[in-house]
View (cartoon, rainbow, N blue to C red):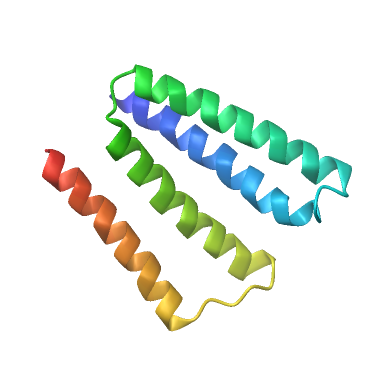
Length: 108
């Protein structure tokens, strides 16, 4: 099961890289960020498919993927892309992560 979660982490990192580069591509007008978008999303979905094939339920995989992805993109945006995070947004991120934990706990 450890390998499954490591693969899920790879899928999340690839998707986050693609999403961050989506903004950096400036509407696909910059070559290198645009290539990272396409490659990042392709890797993310191929690896996510492998995670699901290994038996992780789609609800659990997608909940983890989306919560961690949203938190990472928001953090990267705040730290490196000059995007502000308000207290309400931080609370929302905490609630998203809490929701994923609830899904995990409910499936155990």
